[in-house]
Image 1 (spheres, helix red, strand yellow):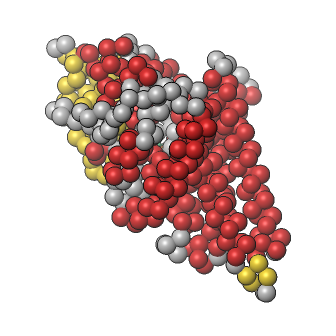
Image 2 (spheres, helix red, strand yellow):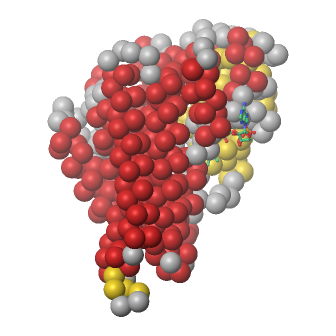
Length: 383
Ligand SMILES: Cc1cc2nc3c(=O)[nH]c(=O)nc-3n(C[C@H](O)[C@H](O)[C@H](O)COP(=O)(O)OP(=O)(O)OC[C@H]3O[C@@H](n4cnc5c(N)ncnc54)[C@H](O)[C@@H]3O)c2cc1C
């Protein structure tokens, strides 16, 4: 495996500026064509790896740049997702895959798999929790892990798995005690060549089209014991923590997408004329965009509050849910407002506005739907 240049400590301003420049020059110009073709943006991923943007958030001992602060990561994520949200998710997959590995894995396991994520050619990574019959209720998963001859045999199906049809590495959540809900949930690392690990088919999507999602299945798939991450039954708590962190990062990405949509709409509203004047002079248009600005700034503040709580070792689960809910809904609102501001031009397929509208919707669904975020916030009120 070719290793990228040695990493050096980075200050936030230069990292953020590098992320913005990469987003502007390497992501935004190709965003529409990747959406149309649904191709995996491998060339952009390679350039992001060379620029250190695939592994800035991984610890230095495994080859990353060691940006530990979630607040700092959120600042970088906002810039990258401003460039293009689905391409950002392709670039970010290694970091998201590293979450459960860092939370649950042994030092030997981290040494074994994390350095590749920091290489010039990062492997395609997946984290597989959701099943055809169980999504929001992750404790109900039915994929089984049965002990056998120095390891486990996995059986079951997973659905909507990011990178699933091309996964070189996949962390799969299965149960060692069917019917016991969270008590049996255990994590395993499966590799592409493992017999019985079936990747695909890829699922056609409404948006986020160049970031692929697929089914994966495990048909008597044997994994040796040293691929179990953490103790038997220990994965569910780790998973909930990983979800909380992921929701904050997802919120930052939603804010980035929404910001891009707002900028597009403002620029258009300055140029486009109707009834003899620029359309931003109509209060209906300018107030709609003022509302977008308000919602995005609220969401960004909530995202950074949640990140700072996490960074300073305070409980942050409810704040993560609030940030994810506020940011994903602000992003959909912003993209919808952009389509409306552009009028017919916003609905045509060569417009980024319609693409962002389709892309933004995903953020209200994955890593816990808006309904589930409301449920978590409500629970915190009556705990
Ligand atoms: C493009 C894409 C990529 C994804 N990537 C991954 C991935 O990489 N790995 C992975 O494991 N998963 C992934 N997912 C799955 C995603 O996290 C789930 O789709 C999501 O958690 C919702 O689960 P579900 O689709 O089964 O919906 P369900 O749980 O069936 O929910 C259906 C509806 O019922 C509502 N609902 C359910 N329970 C409640 C409740 N208790 N209270 C109120 N409302 C409720 C939901 O809000 C929703 O509106 C991805 C999904 C998509 C679309």
